[in-house]
Length: 355
Image (cartoon, rainbow, N blue to C red; front, side, top):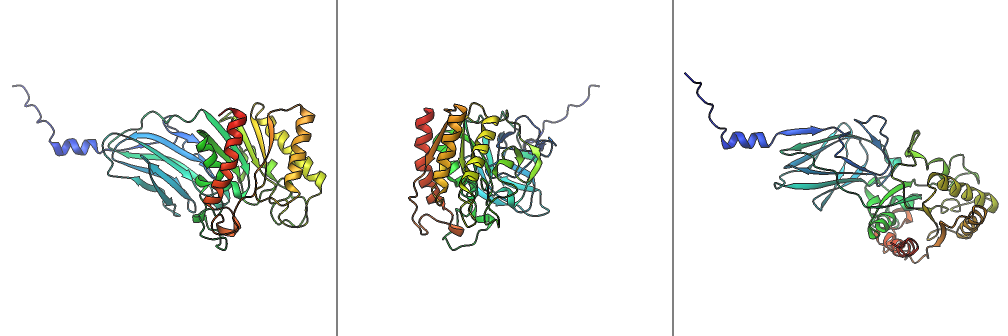
């Protein structure tokens, strides 16, 4: 006799099948990386620069992300809804979305904190009842920002100039760099560390530091000199340099000629990496004299010597109120202060590049 057919699955069985949990490795081509990452282990890429981001399009009802990290904080956005997550030592799975409606969703995670807070290893995602979709499309334009604590967003969510910095008060996603890039519809990469200088880092005993900004611009990881970022990967259309504040933050100041030559060397290194990128060299808004004047002289010297017209000195006027209106922790610009900086920088870039 013919076999008795199996009964059709019940609605409960169908629901169980549709809620299957599927893991996707970090090397899946449908995962989009934005910023500098170390891909030496494709299944466990690491990153530490602030503003580094990961994006995916997916369907399903929940999403878990796997991170090996214990100190950093992140902005997580799913379908426009934002939250902050802080990682814990020994915990690798973070449920970032649940009870989602059927259909497609967009997920983005951005590192709020800078390299000094720690590096992160990404180990993929798990989706309930769905799949990864084609990767999100990034903006056609890209800007790279090279800078110090101001560029990282140090203390920008602090409540007053008198508060002490903590990782929770840092939000690179609300720095002047991120604001400028968003206004110009551009992707952006941050190569920035607190205390970094052109020739002298913050509060060094000598006028010249052993390691300065030029030593970091080729790194995939800020604190790993052996992880190199290829210059042809994510090549920017424009580079913004905002350095010099720390060089003149305290005595002994570097010699004028020493600073100018170091800045020229930095410009040369950036030009070597990115022959076609337009370079904007910023003076201010928190630099003590003679930093802005030295930067302007360095830009002029480099431009003339190399017949380089893809270069411009930009003075950002100091219009920040010395109060909680514009300053967060440790007298660094707060979100409002960063907005004032971005408001000056954005039209300069837009006007020069036709954006």
